[in-house]
Image (tube, rainbow, N blue to C red; front, side, top):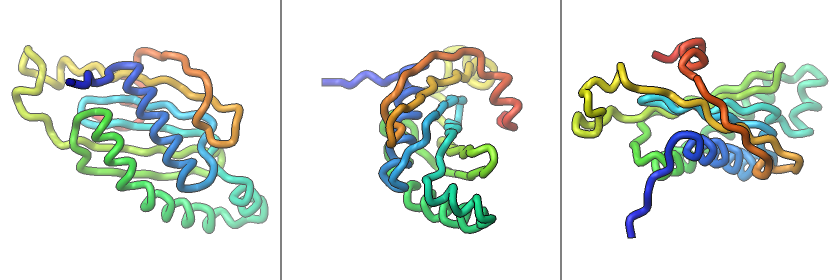
Length: 168
């Protein structure tokens, strides 16, 4: 039985949910909001409200550097499982993973860069760059501790958002 690939908002929601789940598994608490943006050769997942209670206390007493260093370790722990899940969901090979955190406001971004597609996989017009239409994903807000449950709302028109983020 052939499994059909998700696309558009459904794919963005699945990617956002995968990041939230993995962050919760690794840190004990997932973000309360995540938004995936799918570009031609990359996925960007911006998450909000990621810090645990203990991390917030460290920030309160001025130990932001300790929190950021710990988050770097957690990102290394998430790297392989997240790459595998993004590859499974998208059908594309991940060749690069970058992740960073910001304390105030409490934000993080997970970036997955894909291997270039084979020419046959590109658009019928033959110019994948001109026809690529990145899509802003779904947002997930959680009322619980893991960030995995919540509601979603579709958002459109992310080309400007991606360009503002510095993507091609």
